[in-house]
Length: 271
Image (tube, rainbow, N blue to C red; front, side, top):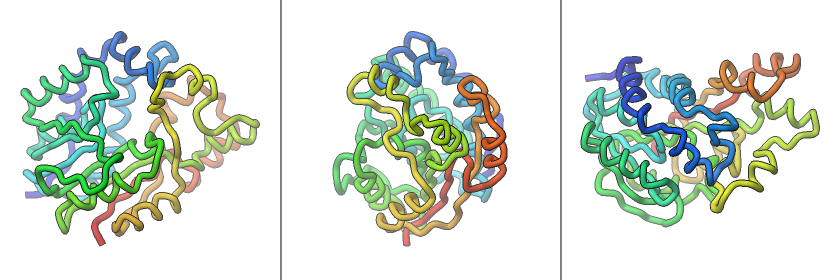
């Protein structure tokens, strides 16, 4: 039986999570990355709602219902909950040490309510980590840019725990996003503002390295993956950039060119 994503399970997931996304919890999360501070402002609910655009890319082709799915890194697990509601057997790998106790408690409720299994591991810091299952699908969405070190262990561990015909879905910010080009032309740093980094706690969990298309193809190839599909797209320009920039003509012109869109999405399989 094939499966297509729909808005209903994803919205149900967000509705379940909303009571847990309090200002106090968000302030605690932001201690390690000031860019997520609700007073900046950063709105986690808006981020989750807009991220449906990202997850839709996974479902451009029918998927197998009831398959084993591994989500890596989730914080507020709207996508895994939606997958569970759609009949997937979902596990989440997450390093609990980065989050306050309220998030751990939320994960217990998510597990009890939706049958999602949480694995408290960090796949990016240890080689040859064998998980309890082999997975048909793995999603690595908005994770690699946060690593302060090589992505090799993470990608090789995914390869190790993926079924022979399994799929890996990845998205990362595009280093050559038109907004970054605009900032560069203004003489501004294209990564995190230095004030954000300076005022954040240790370890800093924001973006350490954003990727180009060639970067992403290289690391996936080195880890033993074949890229089936690659797409560049934008998803946040309608709701977040208005608050932080006055988009110029250059920004609008570059935004029309795929190479300068915001995110890189890849579907790949083991070679």
